[in-house]
Every structure is written in structure tokens, then in C-alpha cells.
Amino acid sequence: MTEIINSYETVFILSTKLGEEGAAAVVEKFKGLIDKHGTVESVDDWGKRRLAYPIAKQTEGYYTLINFKSAPAFTAELDRVFKITDGVLRSIIVKKEIKNEKKQPAPAAEVTADAE
Image (cartoon, rainbow, N blue to C red; front, side):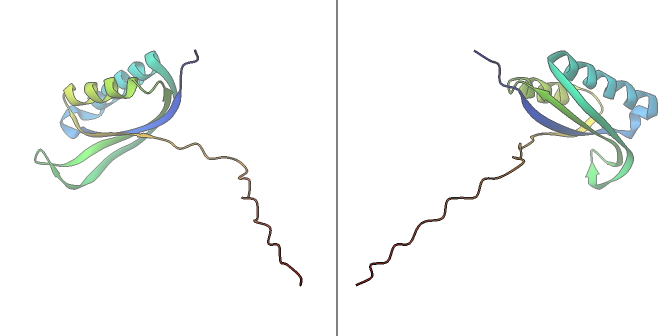
């Protein structure tokens, strides 16, 4: 039986209390964890940004987006690790939808008229 592999993206916000080097180390930790259980496609570091609302009395955080492919069961483990890691303010994992290159148009219903 073949293993199902899905595409995901995760965004997480790290505390500014970690500093630049600390945030980079946490990002590397998550990249390594994802790479162990799947394939990292891209890492986009958004840098330090202002939060929309204070989280744990903090108004800024380091944002990072990681696109990856893995088995569906791994996302629960990744979410668990996000929750127990010091310095992670928020995180989200989203399954990416695969878009078909060409959509087939629905067949048109044929209308037949009785000519009497």
C-alpha cells in the first residue's frame, strides 16, 4: 500500500525575547524535524513584525513560513512540538489544496425537442 503524502504550509510566530540567533535556532530545529518526517520545499523568513494584538504581553514577533510535504499523521506531532517549545507564540498548519491544471468542463445536457 502506498503512503499518502500531502502538501502543507505552516506559519509560526516566535517571541522577540529569543533574539535573532535564538529565533534562527528554533527555525532550524523545526526545519530539521520536518525534514526527518517529510520534505521541506521552502522556508520564508518574514522577519520581525508587529502583532495584530498582544500575545503574552508581547507586541512583536518573528514570523516564519515553511512549505513542506509529509504524511498526514506527522502534522499532529508537529503541532504538539509547537505547543511545548518555549518561545512559540502562535502556530498554524494548513493543508494545501492541489489545483488541477485543466478543469474539464461539465458535459452540457442535450436538449431534445419534439417537433410535432
